[in-house]
Every structure is written in structure tokens, then in C-alpha cells.
Image (cartoon, rainbow over all chains, first blue to last red; front, side):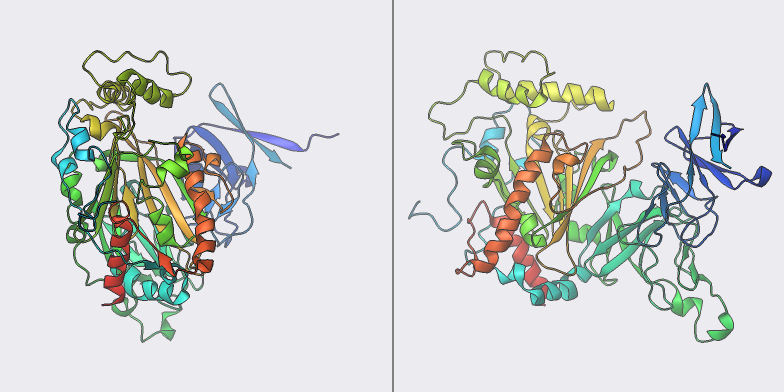
Length: 104
Length: 456
């Protein structure tokens, strides 16, 4: 079976912050909450606006437009504004360096 | 039963709470020694206060919009743009922190067509409040700052259509709101509470656990389950004789009442009292299987004082604070204050709880119980942010919520009575609850305060 995933390497970021990765045609948001890194698609499923700039806290990110919160572990939304989860990507941490696995 | 005493003057046989704590080695704070009981009557409380949709509507119309209510802790909104939604019945408020770090509260509805700006119970962050319907935008100060296609709204201005602000104030790290902009001050509303709490540093605590459970009972009956220790023997001790705690019940004008009951003392009704060492072993059993050997109580000392010393030292190490000045009563006893209409707080060192009860806006037979565990802040460590709220439905056990410890099973016992009470309210031929004059006076106080608003 052909391996259709690809990995990108990124540097760790500060706790309770997020960083947009938009090079190479990507639109990924790297988040760190409680020392754990997460990667999600930079698109709020409520009204398609970017999640970049949202506040990260307690394993959730709040969309800066209307405040919809997404669980960084599962992508699931909270509250009654959004129904669809945001896309999440696995992040592997090895000796201080990170790699995000993306599907092709 | 005594024929000689006036109603409300009778007390349980044996010593009072105040007499019990005067035997402690450490001097209790002065408010602990006060008696502020007042006989408030002995008529039955009509069941329709709980079951009638019309009564619930009257509460919603005449009481809830006019009283101070705990909306959140300050640590829920530490930075500009953080917000917390507080819902009470069909009313909803957004509590937020502005760029100048002020705390403000607004009615949670867009001034265009009324859309709620935030979801029920929501918390999070936004740079401004933007309506998801047509995109009207309000600053954190509540001002209307963006009006899409404003050519069509010559009749709308920043003055006329900014968010409606409601009253907000803080005490003890809690944020209170009042929907009535002409209401008395929070300080006046809280009465004796700040004075009684001045030795407890409630503002220096952080939220360790928060749980919201839906309960199968009217909000008042849910509160009442926590207002007396009369139920302890049957509900929590299987009817075991002499399990009644020694308790004081006090009512303060206008909105505060309390109970305080001893932990780890002799029940004066026991024909053969336990030894201090037996009391110590009972207290030590609370610490679980890893507690190590139970200390010996020296001759002339009491289990309460020895155990309080252990608790103060352990918690002092855990939270990096010196609790040596806490009295035995402050350290061990169950100290529960109530602020009308829906807020309870335990300032003691061993029991970390705060409660808030809210009605179900659509059904008087259900309510919501917000349960918080508050712990002392370590002076050298940043407190963790408030954890996400654990949501429990009617049938869920509290033991599912991490962090409640042995109290999870205790809350389950309390909740088990609630659905039965709701059913009984509707079939009981008597028409109302009969209350004990002393032990259940706080329940009567609650109903009398509600009546003050409904009859106004």
C-alpha cells in the first residue's frame, strides 16, 4: 500500500499560543496548550473564517470572530454555533522537534 | 418535646455548637461564636412554590432580574476579551474583561434583532462581540463599533444601540451581576458576609474542579437539600444512631444564612462516648488507605485539635501557605454560608466547595447545580486556569467527575432524594412541607425572601 501521508517539521512554540503555518500551500495552525502541541486546519467550521489569532487555553482554541471553541484534541466544537469538527492532524514530538503528519 | 419553651427555643440535647468549639485548644473567630437564630414561623411551605409554572414565572419576572447573583470567578476572565456567559432562567449575561482590565457585564443579545451573541454557559475569548447573524460588532466596552450597510439604519446610533450594560461587582474573587441597574450595592446585599469571611482570604483561591449537573427537582428544593444537617443521619449515615452532627443555624439580615457543624467531636447524646483515640481513628480513616499510622492523642488533648494540626501542616505544605493561625473549627468544621437566592460557599480549610443553583427555564421540576472546588493559591506558583466544566445529566453519578473524591458518592446520596421529592410534592395530600423550627429555618428564610420580591 502506498504511503500517502507526508510530514512537515516545525519548531515548538510557547505554551497557550498558536502559530499559522501557511507556506507551501498549507493552512495549518500549530497550537500549544499545557505543553502539548496540536495541529488543526486554520478554518472555523462555523463561518469559514481563520482560527489564527484565537486564544488557546485549557486544550481549546476560541475562534477570534464569534468565539466558537474547538477541542484541540478532537477538533469537536463547543456551544450551539458550530456542528462540524475542525480537521486535526497528528503531531509527534521527538527530542524537542515536532513533525505534523498530513494526508495527501 | 417540651411544653414550656416557645417555638424555636428548643435545641438538641447536650451541648451547642458554640459550647463545643469553646473546648478547642485554639480560639475560634468571633462570628463562629455568634447565635443569630430567629424563629420565622411554622406554617407549611406550599408545594405549589415548587411545582407551579405560575410561581416559577413570578420568580422569573419579579425576583431573578432584581437580585445579585454569582456569575463567575475573576479567574474565568483574566485577560481582555475573555468572557463568561451567565444564564439564569431565560435571562443571559456576558461577563467580560475590557482592554482597561475592567469587568463589565452586558445583556447577551444583539441590539439589531435580538440574537444571543454567545451560547449558553459559554466561555472563551474574542476581540469584540460580533453577532453571527448580520455581523453587528460591539467593542469589549459594549459600544456598537461596526454596523454593516449603515446607509439603511439612519435611526441607529452608538448611543441608541450599544449593548445594554447591567450591574457588576466583585467580592472574594467572585464576580456578581444584577440585571436591575437601580439595585442596591453588592456590599449592602451581602450584609455580614465580608466581615465573617475576612480571615479566610477567599479571593486567594483558585478553581480546581467545576461540575454542572442537571437535577430532577425544583431549584429551591435542590438548595434546601444542602441547607440543613438534619438529613445527615438518614441520607448519609444509614440511620445510624448518634450520627447527628452538632450544628448551629443562623439567619442574618437580609440575604445571608449559615450552618456550621462540628467534625470529629463527641455526639453528646451517645450513652457511652467514644474515646479521643477512637475519634482520631475515625478522622484518620478519611485519609484513605495510604494515610499511614494514626497518631496517638496525648492525655488531655482532643482528636479534633491533633487532627486539625495534621491538616494545617499537610495543606500548608501542599499550597505553600502558613495555616497555623487557623483555629480547629476553621480547619475542620463544615462551615456553609448561603447568599440569597442561589449561592453557597464553604470557607473552611477542609471542605473546598461553592455551589450555585439555577432554575430550568422550561420546567420547574428541574434545575442546574454548579459545583466548584476552590483551593488556596500557592504564593509562588501561577494557579492553573479554571478547568473545563464537567457536565453531568440527571442520571449521571457525581463519581464520574474527576476531582470530587469521596464527596462524589455523598452528592449522589443527596440527589437520590430529589426525584422522589418532586414526585411526592405532586401526590402528597397535605399541601406543603412541614419544617423543623430550628434545623430547617434556613429553608423558611429562603421562601420568605422570595416572597418579599414576589409580593413587592
